[in-house]
Length: 86
Image (cartoon, rainbow, N blue to C red):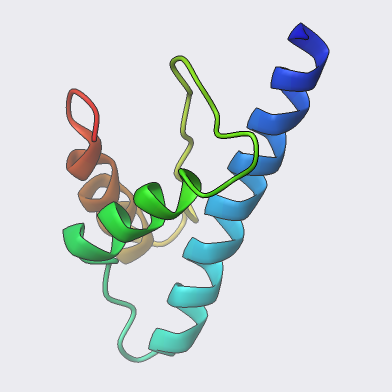
């Protein structure tokens, strides 16, 4: 059971990262804006449709390019949406 949950969380994290990267790629280089809080909430709610749905606490990582100040600012904005959780 624990192994199954670990795989589920890894799959969940991969889906979130893929969704964020896809959304960011759609913004283009010139308009590298953060995801909106609403978009992050939609992504998190979509996770509930996984079968079986994940339970318990999860760790979410927001990756950014440390050499790009705009990328870091975007990552900080996205991380701020999570606060104490969604």
